[in-house]
Amino acid sequence: MELDPESKSDNYSNAQERRVLTRYAVLTIALLIPLVLSFVFIRNLYPFAASTMMLRDRDPGSNYYILRGETVGGETIDLPPISLTNALSGRHWGLVSAAVENKPFQISSLHPENAQLTAAHSSANDLPRAARLEDLLRAWGRIYNSRLPESSPQRLRLVKLDAYRWDGEIGADYGRFVESWKAAL
Image (cartoon, rainbow, N blue to C red; front, side, top):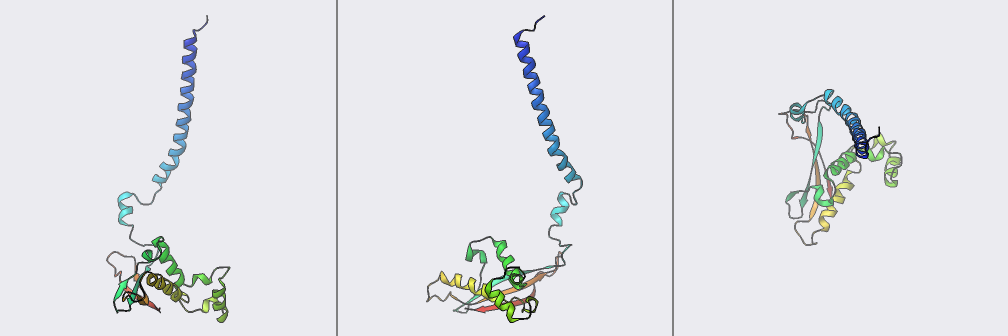
């Protein structure tokens, strides 16, 4: 007894659908298992993760910086670095932190000027704190001044960077002054 052509086509179609469903089931399980495991072993669940986001339990605190300038007219203004260089704001403060901690002197291939400065001291560890920070502050001041006419009272004569410390606790004093650097233009 021979099957009609339509039933053969239906059988083929059903087998093909089963293969596709099996593939999708395997793929779904393969993707779902790691996700489920990550949710099972996660440390904080939603409401708690959001509430503890600002607590710094691993780091005893952190410094943050505020960049200001003093104009020729004697006014003190805030200078957000992102408005000066049109770059990512997080990179500016990483650059400041690296300059304060003398990290450019800890890389394997030093810039020639950094190598000269290191050679003038017995080692990179003997350099004064923030050895090249004034150069960064002057560069930012020059960028700001380049956008203003020479006769403008808004031109900067001084760029100042203040460091403040926050100890990472809710209700802690987040505006504790740490130190300051200045660069005349």
